[in-house]
Image (tube, rainbow over all chains, first blue to last red; front, side):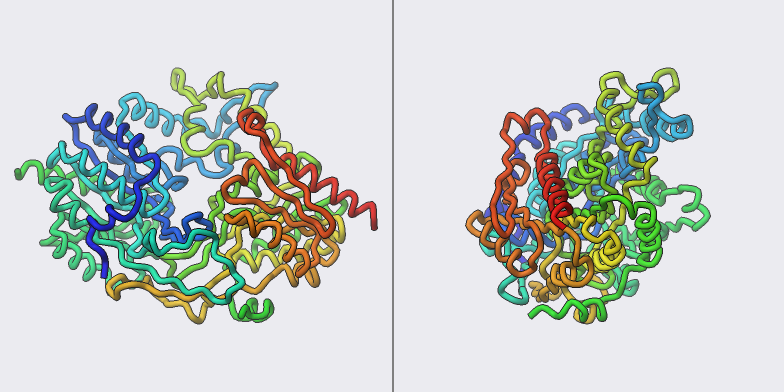
Amino acid sequence: MSSHWQTFYETQAKPDNYDEQMKLVRSFVQSHLDQKVALISSGGTTVPMEHNTVRFVDNFSAGTRGSVSTEYFLENGYAVVFLYRWKSLEPYSRHLQGSQILDSLDVIQGDVIVKEESKSKLLQIITKYQKVENENRLLRVPFTSLFDYLWFLRGICTELAAFGPKCLLYLAAAVSDFYIPSEQMVEHKIQSGGGPLSITLQLVPKMLVPVTTSWVPHAYVISFKLETDENLLVQKARKALDTYKHKLVIGNMLQTRKSRVVLVTQTEEKEIILSSEELKKGGEIEQRIVEDVIRRHEQYLADR
Amino acid sequence: MSSHWQTFYETQAKPDNYDEQMKLVRSFVQSHLDQKVALISSGGTTVPMEHNTVRFVDNFSAGTRGSVSTEYFLENGYAVVFLYRWKSLEPYSRHLQGSQILDSLDVIQGDVIVKEESKSKLLQIITKYQKVENENRLLRVPFTSLFDYLWFLRGICTELAAFGPKCLLYLAAAVSDFYIPSEQMVEHKIQSGGGPLSITLQLVPKMLVPVTTSWVPHAYVISFKLETDENLLVQKARKALDTYKHKLVIGNMLQTRKSRVVLVTQTEEKEIILSSEELKKGGEIEQRIVEDVIRRHEQYLADR
């Protein structure tokens, strides 16, 4: 059985930088109270196997869905709290991974310059990035472990409640369903001398319960569902809506997540598909998803 | 019990891009046969829990030790095969993580330029990077899973045997001691409906055995040992040397790995310590490690 969500917070220590980060969140909230705000979670959570953590269980996610979507929410005027796995993809800098940036620069007579062929791409990115920075519309809150993530999720939601229905939650992070509670975790690196290793993971409490009923009861809440078995996708999305009574589940298959998603509400199912032509031209399915979601959010605000 | 290493390769499929990558390795080897070569492994390996992998066990490593050391080996004239975890730190680009690069650029009258205050740092990085690229002295081979890593380790070692004692192995990757064999792995994402999750991991065969006895018997082989319990560190380093008869174990504690390592050989123990003063000034312990290691490699070549 999963423990109750309150027990989780009572027994799993908060992150060392929690108070400091939450101060930044509160200051960000104060600056944007007249705007629409989105909390976007992104990347996978780690589940430590040792207190001095050498090994951990992780969930597959590069942070693409969250970081790309964040750019489109920002372009559409939202203020965004980006709750992301430390070192996963971030908005804007995601376009310049690995040695791409090194290949965009050159040295001419002892001076560092941007190569001509890289200028138009960089111009677009830097222009958008600087606009957002100047307007202070993006707050990044990094996490690594499942514990960090759940502490910040609660903390940030509680602050965002002030936005009422103007708040949107876009929970794209790949959050572990299982964890090893602190008190069951060993202190030091597990040694390999002892033969095969058996570990038992407990169920993580379903945090969509307090999200929708207690922390941000008026927000427009969207959760994500990743499956590898097509037969389970819509069925599980529907089950989540029935259980948590939130607004929208965005379902996708691991294998086709960049070209197809299905948006499931209480009353409808809608597919968004990007053709291989569109993908080849650099199209991003997140642009279409975010446009659709923003329309729904506006309708939600109008209906109230 | 761990299975024999040969059984591992017979039963765990090779990576899809194996043949293609090994072609690049062979071509790289041919260009540098007159030089000293280092195989540097870096970053953590993943151990998939499902064939369609959503969850995996990972080993903590940002790839700092490997990527920083690679720069110093390159500065000292080595050709380097950098076998690294995909998306972990890479030489040169490691200096420009996250939004650092975005903050180094500016837009003036529609033109993208490098900010004055960023120029001297970027000048150094780009100059070194371009020299290495022009001399074709760095080959990057990415891996993600333990399976990828072990396949490439064997493949690359076999090719590097041609260098005889001029080959150095600097095995800094954080390689899992445990894995779930393909035939015991489930097909689809593990569902959370079934309550707590128990998994059993098998021991990975100790690949230093074939490395030192069969694949590159004349190479100068260095392995790394990371512990969280100080009492185990030197004792385990010594045990590894006794078992595998290689040249050097570099031991470090998780908590102090950036400021202290201990180099353990059959006959001596030597500490390298960076003071907090040196760390503050941007000093990197890898510079001192690599200088020491290169001296040992030269002595090894001279003694033969």
